[in-house]
Length: 101
Image (cartoon, rainbow, N blue to C red; front, side, top):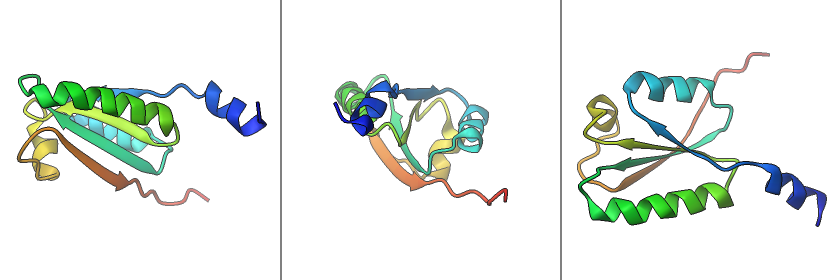
């Protein structure tokens, strides 16, 4: 196995579940990764169950990306900020930070 492949295999891919606006903002602040995928879901929408599996697979394939899922109706301030009107919805964005150098 090549060194790069071995390093990638050691990376644990995770999807972070966020339950509040504060937790979401804290995740953005602390995350050192530059690409963010946010999955807005609802427990009553059967399509979201399938998309949970898709999100988990994407997280495994792209460990350099930060994956977050949240229940759209439980965190309305974030849903409104991203103008979410239906679920499932994925938002892709780049986290930009000021340099600390």
